[in-house]
Amino acid sequence: MKVQANSQMRVLSRWALVLLLSCCLAAGKPSSAPPTAQLSPSGNAAGEAKIHTRTDLVLVPVVVRGKHGKHIPDLSKEAFRLEENGKEQALTLFEEVQPRSDEAPAPSPDRGFSNLPFDSSQKLQLTVLVLDLLNTSPLQRADGKDLLVKFLAKGLARNEPVSLLCITAKGLQLVHPFSTDSAVLIDALNKVPPGAERIMPRRDAVASTLTQLTEIAQAYVGIPGRKSLILAAGDLPDPQSEPGIYTNAHSARDAFQEVWKTLAAANLSVYPVGLAIGALDPSYTRQHLRISSSQASLRGFAYATGGNLCLEANDLMDCLAEAVEDSRSYYMLGFAVQPDDRKPGWRDLKVKVSAEHARVRARDGFYYEEPAPPGPETARHAEVEALASPLAISAVPMFVRVLPPAAKANAPSLLGAKKAVEFMLTIPLNSIKLDPSSANPLDLEVGAIAITKDPREVAEFLHPVHGNPNPELLRKLSREGIQLREKLDLLPGSYEVRCMVRDNNTTLIGTVVFPVEIH
Image (cartoon, rainbow, N blue to C red; front, top):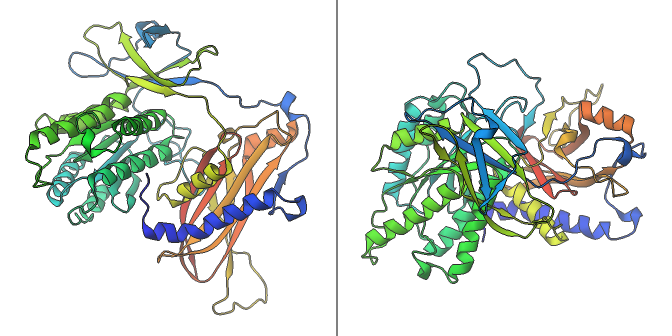
């Protein structure tokens, strides 16, 4: 379903070959295996250290507003009733989240580049703005830009991080990473070209849009807390309203539900902005049906993720301001899926609150499934997709610090010679899972690629990191993280380096993207 830019495919073709060779080598003799980083000494860590185990905890962010639209604070756990498929669930987690104080946070240690937008010790309250340049006309895109600029110009809450993304025919585009400076964000948004009329068939455009929304969810799944995603979208047909758009309406609904599931798992609440449809297709005479179809589709995203549909005809700016506030003041509820209730499928959720004039907003369901270990082909595909994304994937939080070049006395620098770029990759121990049933409870795959501005891939490495650390080493790793010194040999020039860590015990992936200049 994913539509990749040709440049991305060219860049990652070598990486896919590296992954394939790595898998083949792993199946051969031990002497033929790729370089391996062992964490030792080994010991009976499984019985003595704290090991992560799988839990089926479902998190449900709940927004509770009073008569005048303000957050109702200080509600007790007993004030909430959460039902799954009509059956009340016992809350095993309950927390109220409030905006951070206006005091400047204490400076955190500089750990280099990371796939977490800010210090993970703070409560992150994030807003993601997404402009649809695929399912819209140039006029709609200009309208969407103007709306988002107007929203940003009204001023954001203090210390409110916002990022800018675009859905395009060539894949997801990162316009600007998280920033609290609205002027910088407005400048970046104004520089986005509106583009030409869409030439992609509607069916293909929808498939690409769903893939890119999934990519956004995967990027932010490792960041705790509720996040608001404001989506300035155009013509996104609903499978039930326009079944003729799809080859198989039933599979199309499944595709939509799959995206809802991924967004909900990342606690990304979607606030679609329904841009005016306009005359995208002159042969389509019943425009009001098309508008209704698109609104139904966008409403599905809002309800499934706990967001709200914002229409231009309504108080649009108030709706967008509310979207930001919803992820600043809310309650986080959690309940455990019972061991005897593991049937996969969509489950309805309903939250009730015992408070006067309470207005509740929460997602209306979630999809439960037993995680299954992917096959080698699926694993390789996931790694290639992660490295193709312009976003840092946060499912495995990690940090990368570029190390200063080593001083070599009396060693003249040769013109045009490659230079070693060394960096320290740090993976917090609580970012990954240890499997006590395995001979190597710690089982990671670590790699990186360097890309030129062309873009071309010019260097890469990929190797496993595994071991059975004893309690003493585990305590050290808990304090300092898993630290790996890596390097790439590069010619003078400008590069983008993408590092990847895959936790084989959970199949989760983390990536960090950072620039490198070689002089």
